[in-house]
Length: 241
Image (tube, rainbow, N blue to C red):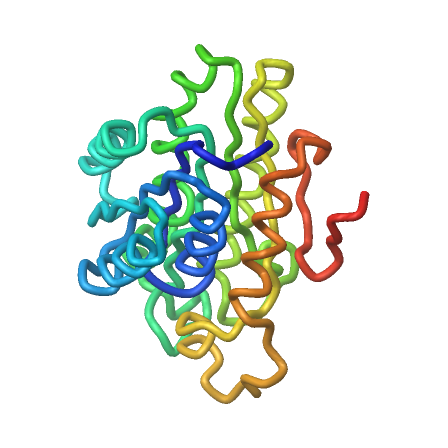
């Protein structure tokens, strides 16, 4: 897929991988609708992209809020036209320091699931219909190794990412052959504010830079040979296929 001129919606775009991916895709000519809760940080990302000659629009919203999802979809369509690529990047860790499951409040688990699973489900429902009518579209689920490994204290986040992975596979199976594709990607450990909040004692020098992973993710988005429903690991992925 040549991303130039295509409408792309990225959630969690105010910092970390989301912001880095927005900058990479903007340089490739994408028309970007960027979603996050933090207005100032999101505006700064969008303004920097526009200052560099790209197209980016900030949509301040919470993907975990039921009454905001269709507003996000409508705003994106009005700003960039057809949304052909949807990147579910927004994530919620839950309260930090991370707690054991026995010490996790039910309300905190509900919030993590709302942002990491239910929000992406609702937003895909809102945008998949137009994609199906056009018989083209790509939905990317940003996952985590916590989806496949049982890390103590990562229970709410890990369970949500495991559900997100399987959601992508089921969407892919149900819409296979329609022209709308899905894949998930584990970006690995990155030097982000989220990782610092979860693992404050980590050696930041050992972590991947979000910009590095964003470049790989942009290559994946442009690679039409990736199988529908695949789950990829950024650390092991190369563009030469």
